[in-house]
Length: 88
Image (cartoon, rainbow, N blue to C red; front, top):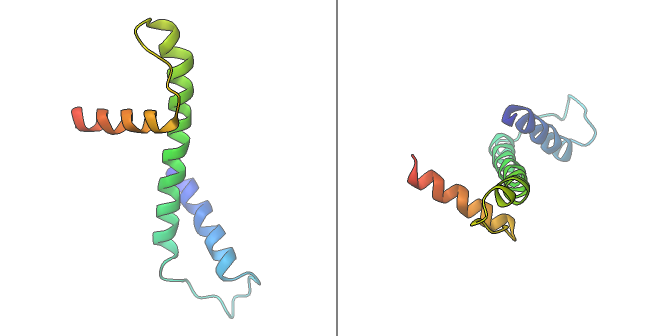
């Protein structure tokens, strides 16, 4: 999925840097690949956090009575970082 999002971000960046789309003025910007990768990373983290928030609040909370609902996407992001540190 990240390659699809990365390709889409690269196409969007190329559209901003070359809006006319002409081949004579087309030159690949040096930063396009790096910026596309950074945007892909942030979009992927946002999507995963939103899905994780939904799964936590509508799957985990009803199944386990000790679990409380997450109020923010940042709680899920913190949980993801914690689990990555505990289980490398």
